[in-house]
Amino acid sequence: MVVFCFLVDQRRKVKSSKPAAGTCSRCGGGASIADMKTSTRFCYVPFYWKTWRAIICTFCGALLRSYR
Ligand SMILES: [Zn+2]
Image (cartoon, rainbow, N blue to C red; front, side):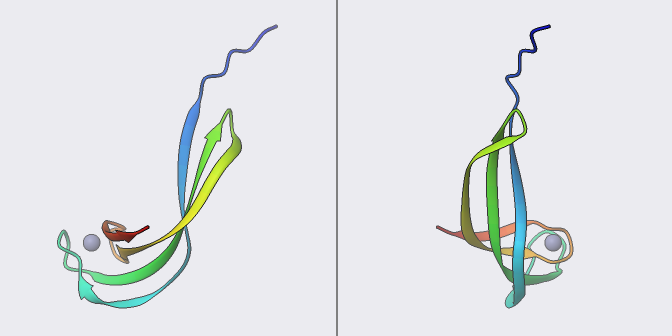
């Protein structure tokens, strides 16, 4: 049996975060500086990932600002 797999997905994970000044423009919740890790997977096998820093909302998880 041959299984064709063309599934590529991205996982975004928050490695660590600490409170930051500012509020979320969507829900008004508190913002926090987070170290993010994005991994791109092909057939559930990670083949590329990067870490980056962003300001996210701690309440709704919205991405408020990102640094590359
Ligand atoms: Zn929010």
